[in-house]
Length: 312
Image (cartoon, rainbow, N blue to C red; front, side, top):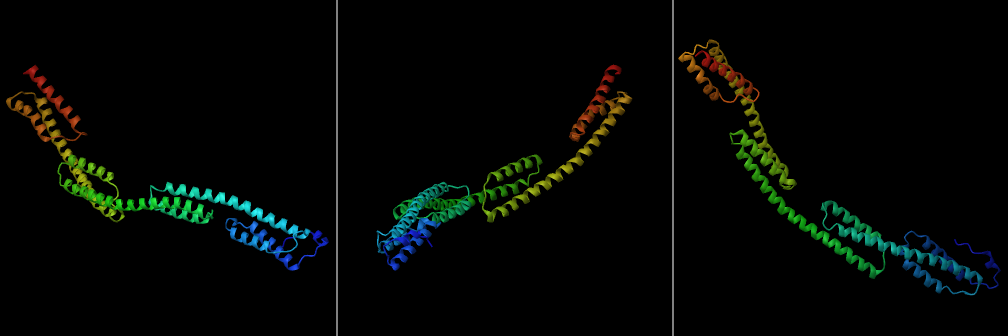
């Protein structure tokens, strides 16, 4: 309850107790409104208090009522100042909300943007009123930003459906190409083709959550077939290289024997002349063997023909 100066008791004018109590209650209500945190929405209540105060009657000249009037006016003034500050804050808040809504027009993720737009609507409802005219003006701006967002969102999902369909067809075509490629017998060509298809796959966007995993599994199965073929090929090639290396070592042994004899008979000359052709016919023995074997083989034959020139 508001404390009133005791000097009021010395006033010679006797006030009506009923009117005095009413005004004391109005002062207390004004005090409570002035201390309220939700000051932006008390305009109706403070207007009602003012009307009740004017109807309160009593002796306007009494010292006691002047004290009540001063306290009432003080609280009304505090409310007015807070309301003005609140209105400014509300306008700033709503203006910021509008700008944020505009920034969401073309987001990277509409899912995240939708959550943010919902949050902005909650903030808008809590921002308080600026009066119907100003509220309507700002609401039209906020609504326009929201309408643009939802229109873009609708277009995005409609276009995404078309994009998913196109990407699905593109990925299916890559899978079909991979199946054909796995029929190739030339491992160099097959490897080149599979690398190309993998790059193409990475370049194609999503086909949608419902299809992406299934499509990838099909493509991955074709790649597994390729890797199995590649492993088998190189395993077989390794064995082939080993066999060829052994065959070339046998030719080297024959060349050494001819060099050691160096009789230069027709039979021996025929044998030596045929060694190079046989070497070529065997094929490559792999990079780990071929160079050393060829060097040894060639040196022996060069010595043989040098001997032929010298002794023959």
